[in-house]
Length: 172
Length: 113
Image (cartoon, rainbow over all chains, first blue to last red):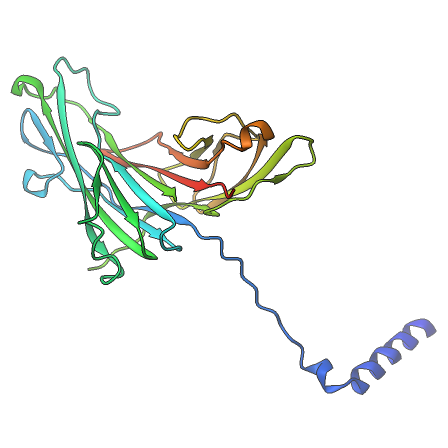
């Protein structure tokens, strides 16, 4: 008990007798910025069926184009590569060859000045793959399209068809 | 124009650094994967060379379940004989339940040399 009182007394003396700097405590605020890429699904796509042999994400065909958003926190640190579907990931039994076409384009950007050239600077690697250099920090929205035509213009069998777009954010 | 982020896959850091591990001849680094995709429950990590050819590595989990709005830290161990060629560490969403045109997301960090 005596020891405890003695300790309180010492603390009290130090507290009240301390210099001004003891009260002006520096509170550090630290941050470790590591940078990152974020890929988001903004809009889920759906196929419309304007003809029995055709599935399309175009709004005019009754579909909905998927929209992907990519955020980067470091400029010139990433490129993003999109691969449009070249096959169904699941579908009913198909007896004909299905021909796919697809494309990606910039829908919107968060920095109109520094991202203005994203679409014109796009590299079309092949019919399905498009590549963009992300030279500015911020968000970019990409719109994808996909069309599938069944061989011989024969009707697609009834059932559920699924496919997916691949988005790759690759550090440079 | 209004947008709302529904689903997101995030990985950091952009440039992970390989450090000596407690095991001789083995380097280690770590990456953090954040799952804000409600439609994705599993992520797979891989290590690749500059041409995206797979590089052998060891991790407690190569395929790992990450709950929605949770993150996971992957410790990646590399034999030093491969670390020179190792260039990218990638995390990829594993789609198990997709509807119509879904999104397969893949993020690759570049190992700092």
